[in-house]
Length: 242
Ligand SMILES: *[C@@H]1O[C@H](CO)[C@@H](O)[C@H](O)[C@H]1NC(C)=O
Ligand SMILES: [Zn+2]
Image 1: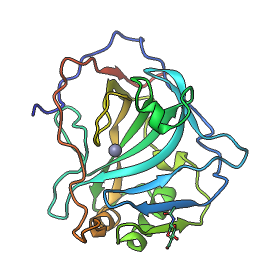
Image 2 (image 1 turned 90 degrees about the vertical axis):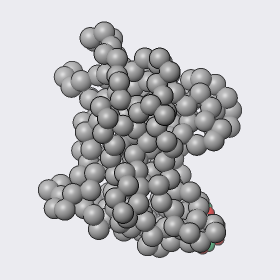
Image 3 (image 1 turned 180 degrees about the horizontal axis):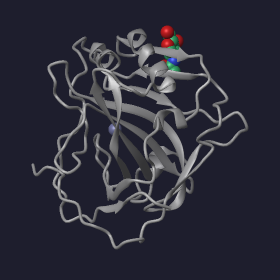
Image 4 (image 1 turned 135 degrees about the horizontal axis):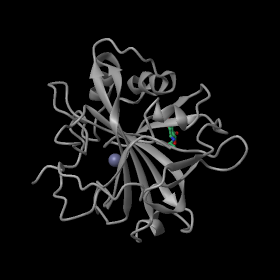
């Protein structure tokens, strides 16, 4: 498979910024972190004032409502776990925030349409002494030892917002393209926005992912989809500014 390396430069200014709503509002309920046998995932609840966090702008023509967060990771022997390679480079962990187009009733329905789903992808990179501490993400990582077995879940009692999952990622700087879900059936239903600058996380925190187990008891490692050829897809780049 050809690495996802070559990006086309979009015409300058053709992509607007991403517009986030309710991302900074606290959730109405504590988050529940679940080991589903393939990844650690969190279903996004509504926020304290009712609405779900949403995103629009960038390559999106509609408003998309946040539904869930999950992670892809590598292995303790140093395999990288990201699903995207950015200019040939992969990262240790990739965090996905999955959104559904609000014009569709539910996820099942949304997945049947090319504009059904929008995923934001955030890269995490292991460093020995991170300068930045991400309190929200660290609360999630610290619960991982509580969901080692497949089918278990743990409640995160501290108040979080969806913005906590973005850390301090530069949301003005992204690649965007129309592609597929990275898990079967890999339907061509996803508009991707990938932030190229990684969040730097300590090895201790990332190592907690490697303890999680599948239904058959073996570790969940390398739970990413292999790199896919671009197949002539246009990849748009938005860089900084405005
Ligand atoms: C969470 O785990 C408990 C048992 O520990 C179980 O009763 C409950 O159904 C689980 N919830 C979800 C959403 O999986
Ligand atoms: Zn994913």
